[in-house]
Amino acid sequence: MVKKILPVVTKAELENAGDDAWDFLFLFIDKYYDLMQTGDVSEIAGFFYLKQQTLILFNNLYGQVVNGGFLQLIFNGHSYILNKAFSNNIRLWGAEKLAATVDKAMHFFLLKKDELLKLNTNEDFSNMYKQYPEFESIDNEFYEIMDDETKIIRGYVENNIDAFARIV
Image 1 (spheres, helix red, strand yellow):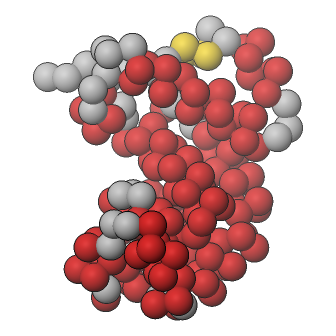
Image 2 (image 1 turned 60 degrees about the vertical axis):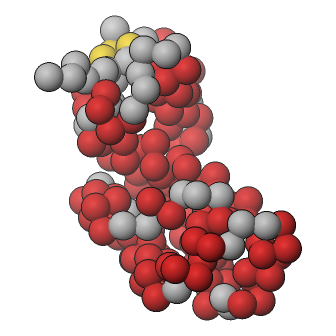
C-alpha cells in the first residue's frame, strides 16, 4: 500500500497568503511540487490524494490555457486533464462554470483527438488555431470565468483544508 502525502503548512503561512486566491492555492501547490522534486514522489496518482491531484491538475489547466488556450494544453501533452473525472471533481468543489468549460473543450478534443495528438511541430501548433477555431470561444469563456472560479476553488480548499495539507 502506497503511503499518501499531506505536506505541512503552518498557520503563519496561511496568514501570509492573504486574500489573493492564487497566493493561497500556491501555498499548497508549491509544496506538492517540492515533494515531487525530492525524488520521494515519482507519480502524482500514487502519492497524492484525489483532492490534491485535482488541485495540481487545476494549476496545470490554468497555466496552459492562459498562455495559449486549450489548444496549447493539448499540444503540450496535457490533454489528460480533459476528462469527466476532473470536471466532475471541480464541479463538486462548486466550480460549475469551469467544469462546463472543461466539458466543452473535452467534447471538441474527443471529436478530433486522433488529428490533434498527431500534431507535434511548431508549424503544426501555429496552424492549430486556424484549423480548430471552435476552441477560441471556449478559451474566451475560460478567460471570462477564471477569476471567479479560482475564488470558488480557493474557498473549497479553505473549507476542506485537512484534505490538502497538515496545518501546524
